[in-house]
Structure formats: structure tokens, C-alpha cells
Image (tube, rainbow, N blue to C red; front, side):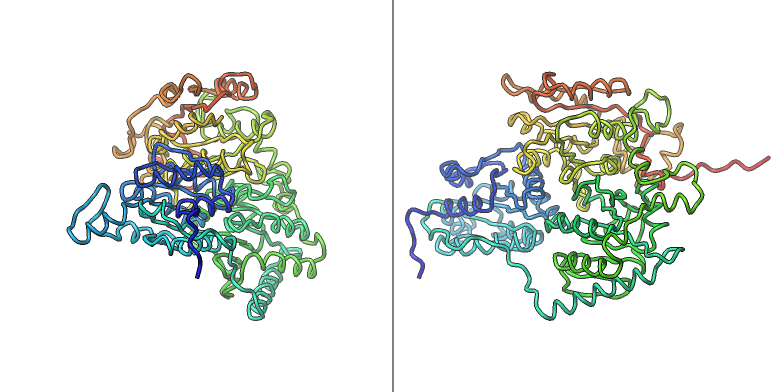
Length: 617
């Protein structure tokens, strides 16, 4: 029998376990049910409480923190707080982010009154398991803690599941249990991996053999193998960036990433050929990935609509290793873990083709074979150079002085690669911001986005967690967010200001309307600048986004806002960002980027219908 230690309480037990996981910051919105836990948390001193304006913002911050650090946590109050946090937890579940959701509920006595008399207290629902039931849909373990004696086992089970499954868990703790005594932590929390035995080895060997057969069955015109690796989100979630680097360096095989795995490894590796995102890919990347490579090897990549960018499926010349199994063409090999697959595939490829035997510059090869197609780069080095164009009017549509999505991101790419001496973490929101930023050239760990759940406004709260994660603390967050998305979560700039985060938030103001929704529903709007306005339901109320900085700034907590409407103003702002003494670098900076309504990233051009050719009279 485990002895109860009066020196340890349920609150202290949870605080100790979170600290053991290396969590340095807990995000959330307080309430009376949560107060005793937060008091204990401060007394322990290992974890800093970060109060956010909204529970959704707390979840976004914890999500980004977990993507970088490996696990994150948010704490809220029952009912009204928990339901606000649910969206962020749902996104973490879909995108395999280990997030711990702590929900402080009414005390045991009030639950008994509710059961016996139907008496409801603040935030309670007549359905006693309402919070638990909804969180069961978006977690791998959900616990209601009503007995202090059982609390340690329940907490340990949930945290173990969180680490092992790389997905959220839910802990609902009744208020009067926080200060109740319980056993102290014993064995450390550890990840429990799926056992790898003789059966697993046989399945792994068969999958690797099938991959090599697929490569051999799809040679290029010269008879040489021509595969390309498509590295995906699970490389990041399972912390396999080092093994991916080992594989491409040992074999020389060219690789792309999904947009969700962008910058999972350094993008200056000589084998890196760009971000592949279906029809929304950079034309050069799509050219070599789909038309020149003869088979595609997805490693940890998810076949989502965002990753496939308008394509409906993968083909028979694809390998897709994700979700605990490997499909090779029409064959499927269940229970093959990515962690074992990468080194086994590396050894097999080196044995079959020699060390570095798959090394190739697919840009140069395709260029030579096709006879220099107009506008194509001659080599991989030329493709990369084309992404670092100096001047924010590059590839513009319309007047050279007007800002465009493409021009802004081309200019930012040059700034990050050649002008700024600071480290940056680019945090991109959904829609045009994500599409525009996917071709930025970034170091490992320099990019965050929510690419499957796509909750608009995610980036603003996420920047808080990105800035506070220990692994990226020196880096400044650079946020790209649409104006409609920013209106959802703008108050999270308050947290940036309060904490003195030197974030730079580019609000892409395309004339106050939901540009991506217009593109998805009626893309013909973008085909003709003279066309009538967008659909009425996509129109936003116009804000002076840059002026919000004055709302959030305080005497000792500076925040600044600027508006840029042309290329010269953008250039001037970026020059200021390189000057440490400039006041704009003292705290968060809100940048309102004025764009024209009919502008859109070039990557979305495939959705816009071509103007009809007039018939000859």
C-alpha cells in the first residue's frame, strides 16, 4: 500500500510532474476553481504562469510551445473556459501535438448537490460529464479526478499517454481536491513505445524491400533511379530530423518537405529541393517533384488536402510512410514505425546504390533534358537564388510600387537571408499567409504553422508559445496573419506586450475581406480587376490594425504599430528592424500591410479561371 504523504497534495503532484516534463510555462485563464493550483505552482517555482486574454489563445500558445519543446500545457476553468479551449485541443489532436489540458471543476460537494437536488453552480451543466465527453473526442486519455488517493495514478496515466501517443490529454480536477494529500511522485514519467520484435522486423524488411523495388521499377530515361523524398509532419512530431538528415546525406537523395514539415531540417542542405504542396507548389518545385522525379517517397507525410494542394490522391508510384504503417504503391505494411524505417531505408539505399549514389540536382537535369524551358532555373542553386530577390516589387502584378503577396514574401526572404543578423521563428497563419510564406528559406526549427486544422488566427497566440519555448527563446517571432484571422485573436498581442516579446506581426490587409474564402467559393473574382466586389459575407469591417499597438502598450511595456502601403515603406521598415537601437525593436510591432483586393499569392493561380478568349468576328 502506498503511504499518503501529507507534504504532497494533488496540486503539488501535478506541478511536480509538469516540471519533470521540462515545462517552463503554463498558459491559461484563471478562475476560482483553478486558483489553489496556481498558488501551489508559484510556490514550487519551476513553472511560470502566463495568463492570456482568452482560453483559445492559451491553447494556441501551448500548442506552439509543444511543437518546439515536445510537450506543452494549458489550464482553464470548467465549462466556459474548457469549451473555449476545446478548439485548440482539437487542432492539437489532429496535428499530433502533445498538449496537456487541465480543467479545474467545481468542488465535490457541489457535484453532490447537483446530483441530489439539481442545484447548479457557476459554469456547471446539468449533464455532469459534458466536459469529459467532449474532450474524449480530441484526446488520447481523459480523466476526472475526484479522489485524491487515485489522483497520482490518473495523472501519471494521462501524461504517459500524452508523451507516447504525441497527442493531447485531459485532466479535470475538482476544486476541493487541489489541497488534499496524496502520494509523492515515484517513477519518472516516460514515453512507452510500441514494442519492436521479430514480427515487426519482418514487416520492416518487407516494406524496405518493396520501396527498393518501386525505385527500380521507375527509372529515369537514362536507366538511373530518380526518387525524391517527401518529408512530412511526423518527422517533426517524432523528433526525427537528425535521422532524416543522416538519410539524405548518406544517400544523396533529393528531398522536399510538406508545408507542415517546412524547416524540420535546415533548408540549405544541398539535397533540399523545396516545399511540395500539390498545385500550390512553387512551379519549379512541382516541375521537378511531379514531372522529373519518377517516384516519390513520403516519410512522415500526411496526405491532407493542404499538403496535396488541389490534388485528390497519391499515385501508384508513391510511398507513404505515416500513421504507423507504410503503403508502397498498392501494397500496405502495417505496424512499421517511422523511427525504425528511416535507418533501415538508409542502410538499404546505400547498399543498393552506394554512398551518395542517389545524389542529383533535379533542376539541372530537367533543365538539360528539356532544353532550357523558358523561365526555369538552370540548377538548384539558381532556383534558390530566385527566392532571395531583393526588392519587394518582384513578380508584381500592377503598379511597381504597390505591395503584393508575392512581392512581400520575396522581400522578406531576402531580409531573412541577407540582411537580418537575428534569429527568427516564422509563425504563419492559415490561407494566403501560409501559401505565401511556404517558400521562405529557413533554418531548422524556423517555421511553425497549423496546416490541417487551419484555425484562423492561430498564429497570434502561437507566437507567444514559440517565443517562450526554451529551444527557441533567442529567436524573435515573425507572424504572418490575414486581416480576418487577426480580428479573431488580436487580443493575444496583449500577452506579447505584457511579456516584452519582440514579435513582428504582419497583418496582411487585402482591403478588409476574407480573400481565401472568396478564392475557394468564387475564384472568378480574381480573374478580372474590374469585376464587382466580393461576396457580401466575405466583407470585413475595416480596422486600423497598426493603431492597436497604442491600446496594448503601457508605461513600461512598449508596443509599436506601423502601416506600409508601398515597396519603399516596406524597405524602410525592414531597415529599421536591423537597428537594435530603433524603438520599434523594443517590444511587439504590429505592421499593417496594405494590399489590393484582387491580389493573391502566385501559388493559388491554378484555382483562378483564365479569361475567355474572344471569338474572332
